[in-house]
View 1 (cartoon, helix red, strand yellow):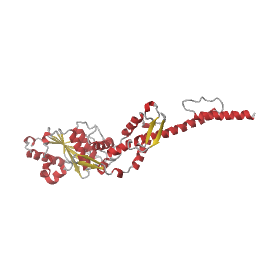
View 2: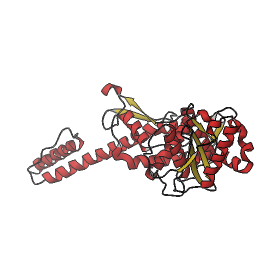
View 3: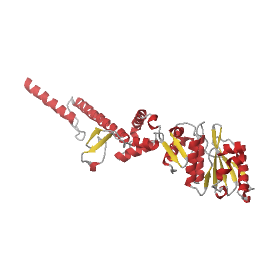
View 4: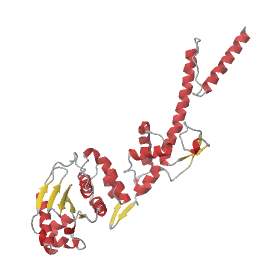
Length: 353
């Protein structure tokens, strides 16, 4: 009796081993014997282990598809499309690559500051043809690891040139988080706005008003040597007082000087300075029709900031919307996204819709 029992146990062990190696595509039918529950438990543990292994492979695939450290090699399935290990048979090898998505972002923008979640998800969907929204926490962690491995010193020589403007990483860094924008960012972006609609808009350098106040009209007389302001439709004049940015606009055809402020402040003396400047400019350029009829207005019911750091971002957004005849459909909650977009626009030297 002992030998048949021993053979039965060996056969049953082999049967269990076969079950543990089975794929999910070969479902195991519940055993009716008292040990059926134990068999199912062992089988489930096997599948869970396989899932964890597949998830590890897929995790590596996700990260390296955006950082460029692993290449997938097709085994001739699904037309050679690059898919996660769990979906198709692939082999992988660790190789250094400079073509990863994050590497591309670093090369193009000097940092990951303008990188949006939408960009990463879009790239992953492009590579794998699948939505990875459920893997956001992991992707965020891997991007943080990438940041740690690529210190800012590695891109310290990054520069952006446009006309007479030059931005370095210190300038671009003012667009990160809740930093205050500096004059260089304001001025180059203002010129991008002006160049998008050159027949209509003239943007004044942020130092214009400061120079006008300290040196009078003669101090800025040459600033319009090559331009006739009165042939324009809209003048954009950023105002920087101490630690706050505001905007003055001039509607030339309607002779209206307006003041925009994201904290609801109204600096009347600034508006008066611009009014006097326009009268003197009209006289100097022999444009008598613009020597009278000017009105001033404080623009209310516009998007307002809810912190102490985004005034410059609001000014640039005002400028863009006014120049392109777009409604003010933005708020404080949009500022992180707007900062990233402005960063991209500066590096790409053109406005993005």
